[in-house]
Image 1: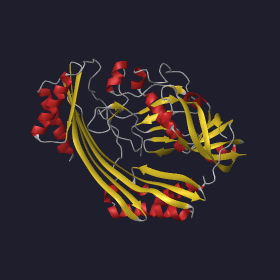
Image 2: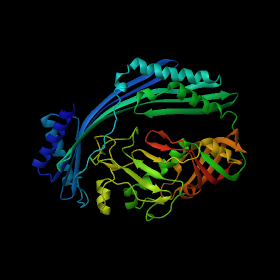
Image 3: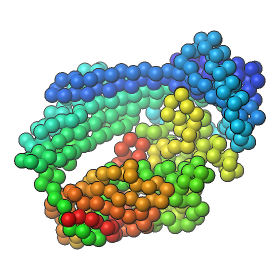
Image 4: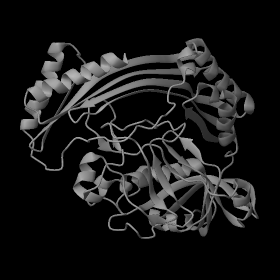
Length: 447
């Protein structure tokens, strides 16, 4: 379909410029999503969704108009172009709106594993069933499997603009997810595990089922500890939760709107020198990797915080123009129904040198945090947080007992500055990734 989709996008751009648009862009997205949920070795739900549409953006005298359609006929294209132009006539002019002129090559990326499509639905069901069975068999205290799911998606993106840009790519990803409850007496605890990636052969349902069960079972009998200030080791998944709080603050748009705690701090130290935060849209094997962003700008590796020092922010074409810069390739689109916003791609903390065991061994008394509650209540502008937490207590370098009913509180900037060890175990959860991270000291509120 590549040529056909590019032709449709070209036709839309030509119609727009002939109808008076100074600049025009057409973004065509075709996607297929499969999700399978298993319960008691039977398929509970299976959904196959297909979506296909075209978004048209026009810019004339700094006024932007946008419209989208799922109708690719000549009359459908005429209508969406007419609508975009009409919408543009009602907007306020802004001199920074423009479309990118792309020079340079797109990165060569291996984003499409034919094995995802080649695998039968029966094989995918079997994978989820096996994951559920492994989780149940792990320990008799595993009582309820809340979710045993397989998912995959295929996507095809074509983009054309009146500045001479023409680009296309195809990609696919797949993943499995398991969430469950373990119980003993009155006590019940939850556990989950997941794996998402670009390669079908890398999904191991046995590993994921066991990991979800292990996480739940090890928390049985959890109790609070007394309030104190102690070293805290954050599980990679918890670190990615904090990254979710940081990512909006590292966008150029947040800085321009006065909503970033990093505003005015470029060149300053904002974290421990062990912390390097990167957004890499061309990362090999990254689930959010693509040769270009939602505007057709080549993706890039952007180092945002380098050894603790703030280097810069993420931009799309519009926010970059406001600063006299070029886009970092972070014009992200959720679908063909919207214009490019500033967003992250593969966003992660670079791994350090220390192994996980060594990090724990060096802690005399502290908490290994495996779960936080209430991250949505953290303030992304001030960076203040107070979160419910659970995990495993560490004594003399050994895991001793499960802990629940405590809270950790502080400020994200202080947290970053207090990092005294970064693990070599970088793990991705979707588009965000982190290794284990140790905080020298953090306030713990307990019993």
